[in-house]
Image (cartoon, rainbow, N blue to C red; front, top):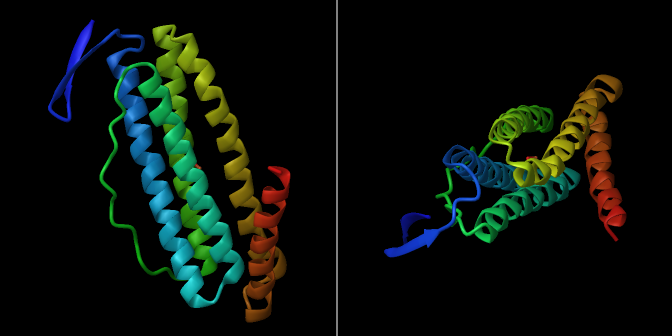
Length: 185
Ligand code: FEO
């Protein structure tokens, strides 16, 4: 048994995962929460800049990241280990271009991927098979996420960076939201 103080209440719980793994999962909650917030800021910037597709894309992306965060919150809580809900970090409020935010997003996804791989290594080292299985979904999700952003960034080389090209890319962003919404129906 172990004990922690949570909201002034002393909780005791059976340790099912190592402290190291708990810390890593709580850290992942912070990463997913920041990603959600950063994508929300990007969506808002797109909306006021007139990129309708970019705006829908990043609002949807922000919701996705929030759902990733909540998956981990439930996982920890269901193990009887209270998840730590982090304070939100102030995101950037203005961006250089649609291309630049897609590049920032790819960079952020790569950071998330590395953190997930570190957790997989911890789970392997701990012989924590349930957490290892839980993380498999995240490993696959990150492959999809990185591919999605890499493909979108390539559009600037393929279509161009003038106003007409950017408008086309904005439409591609809108279509990508519609297609992932129809895939989940
Ligand atoms: Fe949940 Fe895209 O990292």
